[in-house]
Length: 255
Image: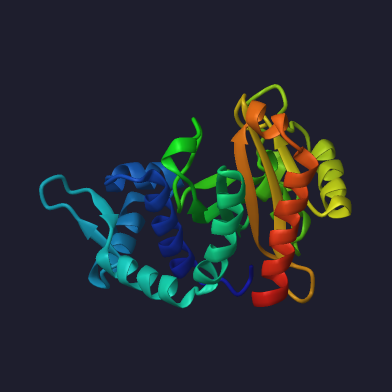
């Protein structure tokens, strides 16, 4: 981290913080939550505001993300053709089983736990899930099928971050220790897929498989999710094979 420019790093930290907060936030609260002097945060926000990366509400004096981030985000989105290339495959998997299909990528920040972020979703109103996060939402990797695939097939994963950030037990099936997670990831590598059997929500079952580049590194992961009763009422092995086949086909054709 010796090459990090502190002022730039702080500005990025403020942007990440505002994005996670999801609402307009005061200088005082930002400074308090980030453990930085209020005057420093004020100067950082003023600089970001001058460039259009944040905007100040003149009525409340609070700050939120600016329009420049939106335009830059749309530019990145337009160049991230992977979503449109994958969509026909995700749609085919959805139409075969009429369950929710998600495609997610890995989100990693130094010193923080790993999250998967949904970039594509195929679903129907007839098969909506109780827990059904939208495109753009993130989830802890250790308790989801796509997340475990991304951890198992990515480079530079440091599981020691979980020693400083305790596991949250969403259900009785949630992984709750680094050793258990490490063993689970070994199994995922051996099998080529991951299972989330009510680890995040009771009644929800999910199958995930990695989408790999030519070096065998995950660029994304695809999953098939549905109520446990419905997912296990038919041939689960067939569904696992279908998810793995789709992931392999995408990897072969586009990555």
